[in-house]
Image 1 (cartoon, rainbow, N blue to C red):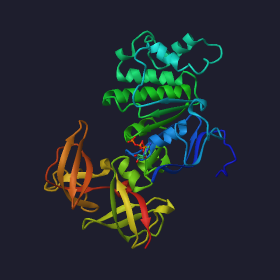
Image 2: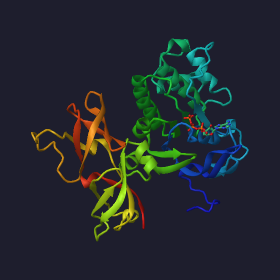
Image 3: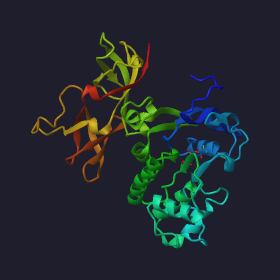
Image 4: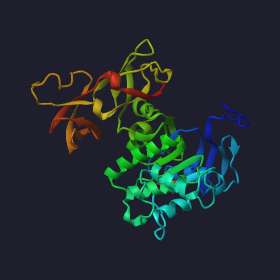
Amino acid sequence: EPTGDETDPAVAVELDGVTKRYGETAAVDGVSLRVREGEFFTLVGPSGCGKTTTLRLIAGFEEPTSGTVRFGGKSMAGVPPEDRDVGVVFQSYALFPHMTVGENVAYGLNFADPPEGTTRDERVAELLELVDLPDAADRDPESLSGGQQQRIAMARALAPGPDVLLLDEPMSALDARLRERLRAQVKEIQSELGITTIYVTHDQEEALAVSDRVAVMNGGTPEQVAPPRTVYREPATRFVAEFVGDNNVFTGSVVDAPAAPDGELAVDVDGGDETLRARTDADPGTAASVGDRIAFCVRPEHLRVASADDGGADESAAPAGENALRATVASAEFLGETTRVTLDWGDRELLVRAVDPLDGAVTVGFDPEDAHVIEVESR
Ligand code: ATP
């Protein structure tokens, strides 16, 4: 780990113990992060978790109360936004309505010269090409769709050739279909340029879809910083498990534990009479003994659900008698490929995915392999 004086050329942006207070509230609370050169890095979390403030600290619109923001190893303390070589795109497109699309993009160059050997017009044409709107130069911004306007806003932010691109919820004003298209386009533009990008969103699906790594934030601090797959498959905390992938989190007491670090645990779960089995992995953090308190999670698509009064018509669909619990269907949302079913289990809810319609009493089972141990509290 660095002492603070060393510089790692592969680190484009570093936050080192950064805190931002507004009166009593710490909007950002002791955040340390390193974003690598060329990386697509996403800050994701619920409203109020400090994503926007973190981005504003990186952009230089705010100064930290304590801690340091570094670009390429250099402290940015006191460096104003226009001297940080960042391009910023906000939620609202903020294009100038009285200028053409081309003039809007050229405006991005106002404080900077076009890259060596290009004229302003060439640079504008190049940027419009990049965002896949090559013929839009003379158009009125308001004649473009929301997604197209956001691509123009990106072109404008990229015009001076910044080192870092900062995107704050650029899709949140768009409808679901446009959002999906635009996020693929944003990702494409980012990989084509290889530009270090820091992206803010509250949408976990969006974060998983576009990022090299994500930081899942809660209460001003990242709880996990990892590639999307890791965050999805191996959530580090209960908060991450519930926020990403709608995991079902179970807590309980260990009543049987394997001798080896990886094996099956038997857990008397809270809120039900059932004993459920969960497989631990080789991670020493998840080693547990009899009597320990434990939390583990199972994703909705890993819970197998079958009607309780099926009479065992379909053996393969029915969960085995062991590692199963009894619940009742509370509500179901038909999503096309699957149905998202909410179950009442004791006084809490479980989320499952089902193919066939379900109603009434059900049994729910899962493979111990699909249970991921999050926390172990030794007795
Ligand atoms: P959202 O998705 O709703 O924008 P966020 O994760 O981006 O949320 P921030 O906007 O960074 O969160 O806000 C974090 C916390 O800091 C919130 O509790 C917010 O009310 C507070 N906060 C942010 N900016 C200010 C400010 N200028 N003055 C006072 N409090 C602020």
